[in-house]
Amino acid sequence: MKKFLTLIFFIVCSNISFGQTVPFDSLIQRGINQIYSLEFEDAEETFGLIKKYEPEHPATKFFPAMVTWWKIMADLDNEEFDKLLIKQLDETIEFCDNLLKRNPNNIDAIFFKGGALGFRGRLYSIRESWFNAAADGKDALPLVHRAYSLDSTNVDVQLGFGIYNYYADVIPEKYPFLKPVMFFFPKGDRHKGLEQLLNAAYNGKYTKAESKYFLMTLYYKFEDNDIEALKYAEELIEQFPNNPAFHKHYARLLRRTSHITKSTVEFKEMYRRCEQNMRGYNDKIRREASYYIADEHWRNADFDEAKKYYKECSDLSVSFDQEDDGFNVISLLQIGKIYDMLERRDTAIAYYKKVLKLDKHRDSHDQAKLYLKEPFKR
Image (cartoon, helix red, strand yellow):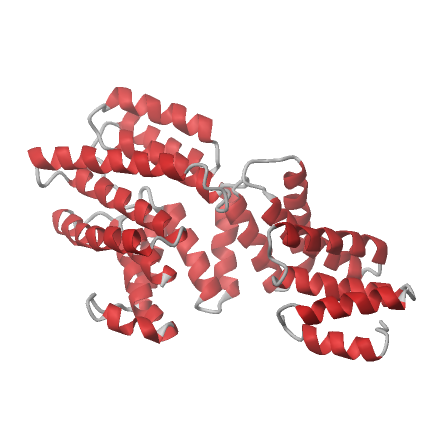
């Protein structure tokens, strides 16, 4: 359900159209890039300048909310900024409604109202407030069609249509229980959706990065095409090297495409940034980085270092109350193997028993049962 609602909310999030002066337009682009780079203070300063050029433009309300949005995206477990974001988005919607009362065809007001509804609904879906999320999704979808009818040449609109076409086709196949819900929405087209996202990714004005992000995640999660996903991850990380969301996908995709050494380099860099408390590089990222750094030490037979990082990965999982997570389960299994090689059989057995008490990941239970019967030998 979350994925279905998210597709509705994203439809209008980045469909932006401007007919403004060059300074205004260039400031918008600068601010967008600063948001993706998590340069929040700089972005806030940039959007403050925008207000000087066009104080009555809805962008002056919408983009400060996007700064808050990425503060949330940098650490989804932290709800500190939720109320502020809702307040900013409510103000954007009210601002746009006032503009539309004066001119019902004000395309900027339509776009930004849709975007505000989309992001508000997406936050509700992340927090599993489904009634509020569904209400915003219902209000957002008609704005896409209205915006397209007013300006069918705006390439940025293709992001919204691409997301809808793709998910409306794929989601009912993957989640059959949603088919009755999808009956009330237009039929989707998976391949057309990818083409529309590709168009926005390379020909859009303000939606290039967002479109590439969606292409990367769709090829990663649904299309089973890691090579294609890696192409977009490389482009995103090249443009926004300090964005932890892009960095994380880039490192994962390097690994999934068998670029093990390059992947480990990236995970080590992610770990270093966590140690330096760089914005967005939190303990969730540190846990994942620890796991893959441990894996490198394991492969190099540096067992003391491997145990150290597997232990850190496990401890972080426990701190998140995610003991059944795959990172923790496999780390515990690996630590057990290490203790077997160190001829500390009792300790190894204790770890194998821990694995059996947790959820199964890959063949973790089979391995634990095997090594309870006889010590692991490399």
